[in-house]
Image (tube, rainbow, N blue to C red):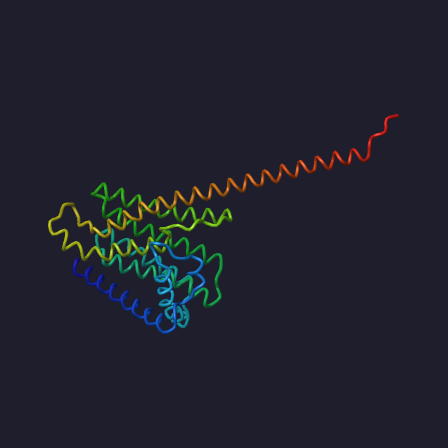
Length: 286
């Protein structure tokens, strides 16, 4: 199991290195690639904007290839879900390398469905709903697989559950802000960042397990990078969710206070106008 996991880990790093070198050459020759979606999302201390631009640049030819093969955005979304399920199943039984590989493919498909939709001009609200739904399920299967894997280690089980709650609360705060037509505060541990660090933790674990866990202290190999990634997501995602929800609530209170003040001013003005009209047309007493 471990040898195959390590093989996939090495393959993932080789692909990532090749993409980084190719994009570096592109930047030297033609400058950075510009994408409206990346500009809107922006970078963060945990996920540099240049990394996002490099990823989108790499995905463009893949998107055009899928279009040439008549693959629809919805089909790509369902493919993302399928590989997300496989990633969760692999992690549940301790195949970190396989889990990382399937999670990477799922994440690539997640990016490609939007790219294909924009290139073909078939963007729709229904597609956005499907994409968001698939994202939630994929993340649940990844973290749910780790919950199952760490079930005999209470501390790590709680850590995986905390990461799961944090991830969903960040997504919920974003959806709530959009529903209330409030701009969601930009903060860390958004979906791309969580996917990156969790997948990186799974990718590195097959390397560290034979080095650091020759003498096993727990019922199963824990994979220290995977635990570190879970800890990072568990802490920062929950902090980010609380900050976002607090900022949203504060914005709503300000809007409500302004609306109430506007009503009061309108009522006061209407009263003054009514009194002025009464003075101009006094009632005659006979």
